[in-house]
Every structure is written in structure tokens, then in C-alpha cells.
Image (cartoon, rainbow, N blue to C red; front, side):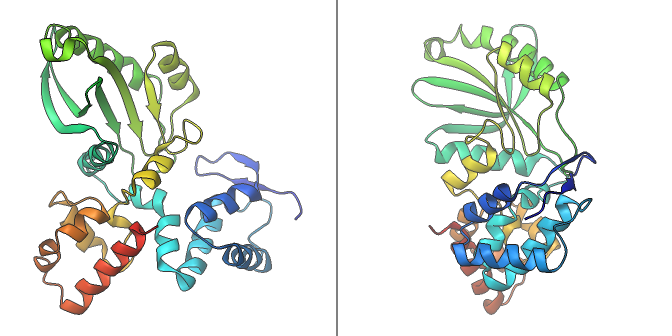
Length: 280
């Protein structure tokens, strides 16, 4: 394939990396022959040309895959599905809480916590027998919105205030205190540099490499209900308003679908797609 540059969501340009497209399709569960078909389709329809946007390539790949497998298409759409969880950031906080539950933590969402100097509302607190984690969730509904250094700066200050009080509580004194910031898009380089210096954990869509949000959601099979293609935008919003944020929750709470006045055929279709998305 000839070399060419694509335009990213930020407006910047970079050399197109075919292996990244193949990897994203492979991660979504696409079989080798489907991946070859997608690449051939994109090449034959002139999507591999200088100046095309990454969004155009993604959109056309998704449209093509959806005809072959809704399950693969839904998983391939994961990044877009997270953006669709807004405009409020609360469903994203619940999703992160559910992800940590799947990693064997006990969690609480939106809890008021006393610090040495002030009271703080913490998006998510996760703890197990050995550690307690303060998690700040930064949700963006556009891919080009990145979290800059001011985020870890103020989160770290809040964490230090809270950690001082946690050290006074007998049940928490021996636990390791950790501070996480998790976003569905990306962090700027100075944000990463500061967090590394302060021993904070930053998790973005693809950072740290191999352990980013995408990897964790796939590992725990916590796929947002916005991944389900047969639900309308309004139906997804109403389900999110019930604090049902991922497909496994929806499968266990079929009554939520009946509350939307969906007929039995539509409910069966939704539940099947949700189950397919979560299946190995």
C-alpha cells in the first residue's frame, strides 16, 4: 500500500498506519477474512488517500462491518459508544465503577468524603483488602477534547487532603492510597508528565499502552449500552437515566426495556445483541 497522511480528530496530520486499523478490527473480534474484506473495500473506494480523515475511514469501516456482524461492529464502535454516553458525565462514572467491580473492587459513586481541610465529592471510590483508590472521571463527548495538566494538578491536591483523613481511620490506615484520573479521550503530554512525577495513575482510551480504558473494558466485558445498534438514541438515553449503563446490566434488568414500551420482538432483539456483544 502506498504511504499517505490522514487528518486526525484534533486536526493534526500523521502517516496512516494500516497495522493499527487491523489491530482495532482484530480486537473487535473480526476474523482474518473479514479484515481483508474491510481493507479491500476501503482501498477500492478510495478511502486510502492523502488528506482523508480518520473519522471517514472509521465510519466506512463500521458501515461495512455492520453488514457482516453486528457483534463485531458494536465492539469496533466502542470509542464512539463512550462519547454517546453524555452529555452528563454521570453514566461514565457509573461505567467506571462497574468496571472496577468486575476487577473485584468494592465501589461507591458520587460520595462526599471529608478531607483535612474540606469536604470533597469523589466520582468513584474503589477498594479491596489492600488498597483504596480515589478516582476522578473526566468525560468528554468529543474526541478532540483532551485533559490537560490542570486536571491532575487539582485532583492531586484533593487526594492529598483526603488521604490525610484516611490515615486517621483505623480500617484504612494500613491500606495503600492511590489516585486515578480516567478519561474516555486522551491526556496531554504535560498532564502525563506531572502525574508520573506525583505517582498518580492516568488511564485514557489507549494509555497506558496495553492497559488503557479500551483494554480494561474489553477485559471486563463492560460494554456500554450505547453500543447496541438496534436501540434508538432516545431509548439509550432513557435506559442510561435508570443507571443501566452496560450490556450485562441490561441483560439482568429486562424490566427496564418493558418500561420503554418496547414490544416483545424488539426486546428479544435488544437482549440478543447485548448478549452477543458480551460473548467471548
